[in-house]
Image (cartoon, rainbow, N blue to C red):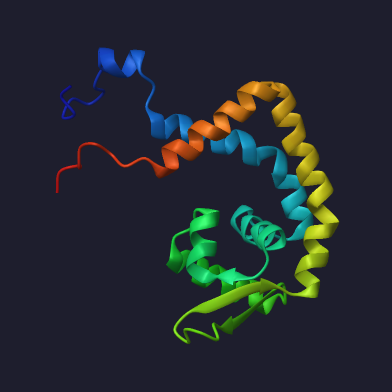
Length: 158
């Protein structure tokens, strides 16, 4: 494929094999779109909701584990945590065993916010599962977990 052409024609490979990144982005949009109304009413971004929800489910955790569990880059999580701290939704403290590490947890206000919206979020997730079918939904989760832990066989150049 000559990328210098003004409108390069898609290769036969691209026509028969959808670009994974594009499909994942579309899937993310399809799963987040139904949540946007709920998130607006809660005054949260989608990323903030992921942080609060994981903390509600897992309890207090180390900041790097929280970044990994939510799929956020550590610097992005650090900036977001400042906003969540200002809103009084999370607490942050130094780890008692390793003072270099930060532990993040929900405050009572954060727990209440999650509690106020969790039923709607779970209903949206149930509707997505029902639309896909229970087995396809389960298989999708397994495949996505496998993709997240996969190491490429070929390292990209550079």
